[in-house]
Every structure is written in structure tokens, then in C-alpha cells.
Length: 346
Image (cartoon, rainbow, N blue to C red; front, side, top):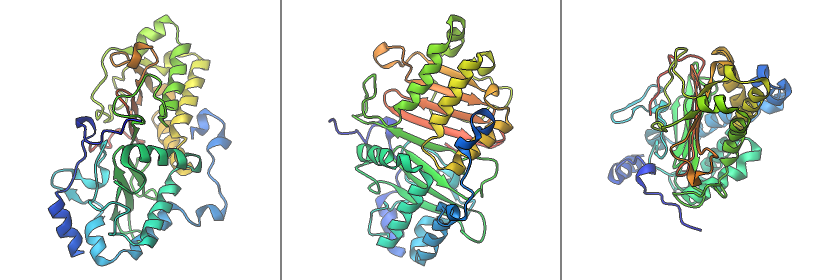
């Protein structure tokens, strides 16, 4: 197996200078669209006993003052180069310098961080995400980093985990209007930087296959609408509002069975995440008009293998962007809110 290229321009990480780090460390519902039961949260008290948010509070309390100087920030902390740090999203970046498996954290703290991570990700996806991390970053904890914004238990707060092909969050609904606590990113280069047409071993390729089932159902006129000649800049996932314009075919132009397949695609997209995050996505989407307010685009200029199984595609609405860029390997940018007024920091 070809070793993943972790130093390519396409995935170049943002790093604090090592000297600076050493100095710092040393100091211190689809419910309206599909079956409601599928996306209903578990109401039992036990379901709330050890949520990622309660574990973030425990982790925060276990951090020493010196550790907090490095990985904890005010809710609205502004980084001179990266802007509002809490809302930053990128394909390969480090929100703070110390890796999770470094000696910066104690064993108990690392266990808590892992538990938070597993609480955000649906159990069915733990092994898949671990595979992605092995392929892309040498394994969980090797290159991932965390930060806590605000003070858990007292005010608004958010936990952020970053690394190559990762921006992941939990916030207990502290951030207004947004799903996932803000924009997220995931990706995978399963067998190197340039993947083959069928993306062997890529844990996220099944999402693209589900979307391509929609394309297969389209007639000639619909395909003409859905096909877009040029793949946009992948970071361009800011909201356009109700006026758009959105690339591709409006879902309002689709038949009932085609819309049903789009719903199945959406379910596949939100499948890796815990129930509460799924519910937030659905609530945000419903508030902006549901899937009927969205469009679906398949980009034809970067078709690996020229097999017309589209590697790059995008589902977009007034304040909903799920952009799957599968060439040369999978990068997925997700930005979902209930209002297009939310600004992107990417």
C-alpha cells in the first residue's frame, strides 16, 4: 500500500512554529422527510449520563492551569492569522500544538478525550473513522489536537478536535443557529493522494455512491441540469441565502422517487454522527425549506477514470452546503445552519 502523502500542497497543515509551542507548553430530522423513528433521540435518563458535553466539563476540570494556557480559550478568542478560532475549518490544521497522545496530557485526560470523540461519532462508525485516521495520520491521537472555548458548566463552551482530514466539534447547543456547533470537515486518502476510480478502502466513498444513484435515475433533461462543468474551489462553502444561485438541478425538478433517493443520500451523509447532531441538521434544513429548497450538482471536469461515476458533487440550499470533493481523494466540507446570516471562517 502506498504511504499517504501528508505533506502535499492540497493537504498542507497549518502549524504553530515549534519554538512557539515549546515556549507555551513549557509555561504550562429528517423527521419531516423520512421515518421519524430513524432520527428520534433516546429520551431515557441513561442516554444523558455521559454525553460528550458532560465529559468536556470533566476534562476541563482535570486540566491544570498550565495546560489551560495552551488548549483553553475565551469563547470569542481571535487568532491574529486565523480569525475567530472557534469557528475555523480547514482540511488539515491544528487548533493547538500538542497532539492527543503526547505527554502534554495525562492518561486520564487522554481517556476522556477519546470518550468525547467516541460520543460525537456514532458507534457504527468508530472503526471506520479509526481506519481513516490510521491511513491518513498514523492512527488516532498521533496528529490530532483539541481546544476548549468558553468554560463548560458555567457559560457557552465548545470542544474542537482537528488534524489532517478532520474538524470535529461538540458544544451542547452553545453556538446559535448552526448544526455540529459550526462547519466541519472530514476526508480520507485511503491508498495515497491519487485514488483509483472506485476509491478502494475509502470509508466515505459509500456516500458518493448513494448520491450517484440519484444521477442514475435522472432523465436526459435532468442530467443536463445536474451536470456542472467546473468544480469550484473546495473551501467555497459559505451560504448564499434563498436567492442562490445554487449549481445543478433544483430538487423541485425531481420526481417523488428521485427525491426519495436524495433523502437516502442525506441519511447516509449524517450517518457517522450522533443522534443529536443528526437532529440538528434536519431541524436546520427544515427551517430553510427542506430538501425542496436545495439543488444537487455533479461536477464533470474531474471524473477519475472517466467512468461517469461522479467523484465531485454538492448538495446545497440557502444555508446548507454538503460538498463532497472526491478527486484526487475525498475531502468533504459541511456547513449547515438555520440562517444564511452565519459567516464562514475557512
